[in-house]
Amino acid sequence: MVNVQGICRVFKVPKKTNGFSATVKSLFQPEYHQREALRNVTFRMEEGETVGFIGPNGAGKSTLIKIMAGILAPTAGDITILGKNPLKYRKEIAAHIGVVFGQKTQLWWDLPLMDSIGLLKHVYRIPAEVFNTRVKELSELLEVGDFMNTPVRQLSLGQRMRGDIFAALLHNPAIMFLDEPTIGLDIIAKGRIRELLQQIQREKKVTVVLTTHDMADVERLCNRVLIIDKGSLLYDGDLSQILDSLGKTRRLVIDFKSRPYLPSLDFVNVVFQDGLRYGIEFQKDCISASDIIALLMKENEVLDVRIEEPDIEGVIKDIYLGKQLLPESRVSS
Ligand SMILES: Nc1ncnc2c1ncn2[C@@H]1O[C@H](COP(=O)(O)OP(=O)(O)OP(=O)(O)O)[C@@H](O)[C@H]1O
Image (spheres, rainbow, N blue to C red):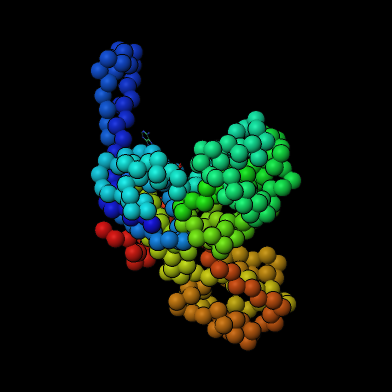
């Protein structure tokens, strides 16, 4: 479905100048420096996969998506989408791609949603019969019936997003690029969009590339992540594997009946205390939660125990900051 081999992309950026004469000179003789946005990126995607592209601002995610969509040429490397070079066969590939930008709608702002969908019918040259079936099917799936005739500018962000997903799926694309599909939504609308995307994954064989800064999107929707930083692919693999190997600490939250006696244990630390509630962090590879609980219960009366899993946001943040080394990744060179 997607085959990216050693993709590099360098941008030529004008050098900044200081002072009046240097600024005037740069107007006539501009000097440039090279900005490496992508460095030897290689990966493949199979049909039906949902892959999350994550990385800090400026990592190179949008550049990679633009290259995959045939909007931008790579400086070096090879890429095929559905077996074809997306730049050379741009129009043909566009017919198989659906795009949703969380920050920018592809719908006509002043037109009712249905009119935008009607225009896209002509853009994608969808036969009337196929179009009618698709509209019926997608209206049911995305529950847009109530606002199909409302101008897009009057829709809530969540409704607009459902409209955008509708538009992206109208021509039955093989690949969907979702760029921050839940950005700015409230917690209920985020959940609804994630549910819908999960349903689309189940019911349609569409291959999805998801770019997001929201780790909950990745956790719910992707079983594979590509971590990109400073233009390089740092990791290509399961999200759960990152958590298993990097989230080495676990936290127990314990409510005691009275002030507890806490024996000193290796690899175990009290990280907070709130009345008779204690937060205890431990190295999961060195000691088990059940051993700690058994030891504490010998000496104390325990009312409640909860174990907290590592927080994905925290683990990924530490990777970006270089505090965490990634597990043995499956990045091909
Ligand atoms: N047209 C351009 N001209 C010059 N530099 C560019 C251009 N587009 C991107 N860059 C640079 O390439 C690098 C990667 O940018 P890109 O937009 O791909 O990052 P990103 O991972 O999508 O970031 P974000 O999460 O903020 O959207 C950045 O340093 C950016 O400034």
